[in-house]
Length: 359
Ligand SMILES: Nc1ncnc2c1ncn2[C@@H]1O[C@H](COP(=O)(O)OP(=O)(O)OP(=O)(O)O)[C@@H](O)[C@H]1O
Figure 1 (cartoon, helix red, strand yellow):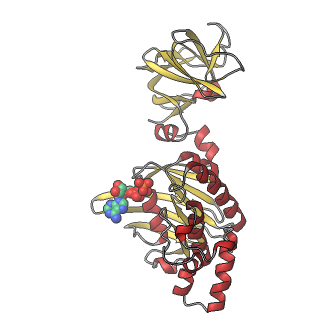
Figure 2 (cartoon, protein in one colour):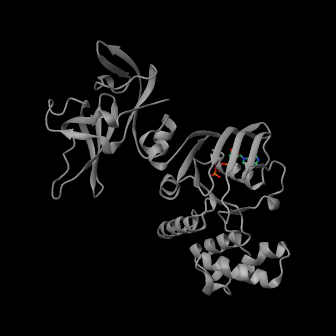
Figure 3 (spheres, helix red, strand yellow):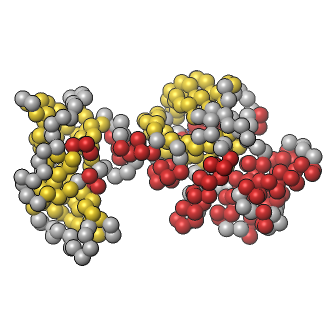
């Protein structure tokens, strides 16, 4: 199968007076497994449907394999889409469901049979060709829907929340199967999800969307380690985030936050603009034994433990610092109890774990 690129240039789409996609620019590389991640209503499905040809943009260009497909009907785009609801015919067998798109293309019978066999083999369902959808598990039904899409040999595979109807265990297993299948096929694949774990564990790159705008595009690790704004920092992983203003005082950079109070930042950090949010992950917070330890190269805060929750590999503490609550995930040693609520603690966050993000 040939892998193709998708170029989305300056695309805008409105439904009536509601702007749903606002100046979207994105290039998806040939063979890439790409996620559109965002909360409900952010425009992910609208963008996916636009690539499939079910929605039309009012401005911009959409290129598949270098060709502008604006105005090209969905069935002429060589794009396969798998829906969240599977959309299988309940009265047809698995084989008949998979044959559906092939028969619509009026292929010879023998070729249809061969393609059904190949598609079912790809999703490991060869033995179940004569069953009906009602006699299959949710995960198997999903695989039939994928086989039906693959049978038409699309150049692009679009998956709209394909795992959200599955229970937690099946979801993880099906997720692994999808990754394997995509790797084997090398098919340019776009996966829509509102579940950050799903996007981060399956895809090469992720576009985080909010309110019809792409907030950031990057590898899962980039998004987690270097979020560019408050939205991405909060949507991808959990985070401590404080609004405030920077100012310099001698050779110290200070951060004045309404909630944390006035704090001195470790040396070597670069201020970007005056008003930004300070961000750090709960797992970056450590407890120091006394007020003086580990001061160099760390942000030092002091607070009172409000609560402790045992997570297995760590304790999750909520610590009151000024008017703020700082969350700290502190790994635990076997047999050692959590620090009691009400204790005074000295928090240290290494300077390389501090981020300044746009608000
Ligand atoms: N055909 C339509 N007509 C009018 N408004 C629409 C239409 N389709 C989608 N919208 C609106 O566009 C916005 C984006 O919807 P979209 O389905 O793309 O979001 P999403 O990020 O995929 O969310 P979800 O995960 O809930 O599907 C929503 O406010 C939705 O109500």
